[in-house]
Length: 116
Image: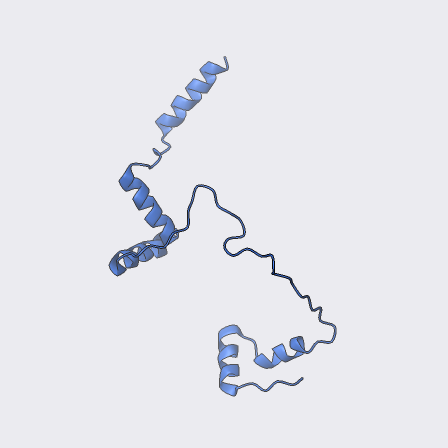
């Protein structure tokens, strides 16, 4: 089987990925290629690994609010969904107290007292 490629699409692929579509022709027609057929008839839709303590939902959120969280996500490196969850937890008072030097000292004193 020989494939013909659109020269514009080939040029765009080279620009974007650094690979010509013609290089894929050899892979597709490799007589030694291993072809595996998978049976998905008993497959389940959704996440492969279930998460505990979290529930997937769909919500409508104002465009401006989402834009703000995505901008903060870009700055902080944290996912915008995590930032939204953190903001909701803080609003509900579900935020864990920060680990301070005083808290660490208190814990160490309690542990030392319990084991001496």
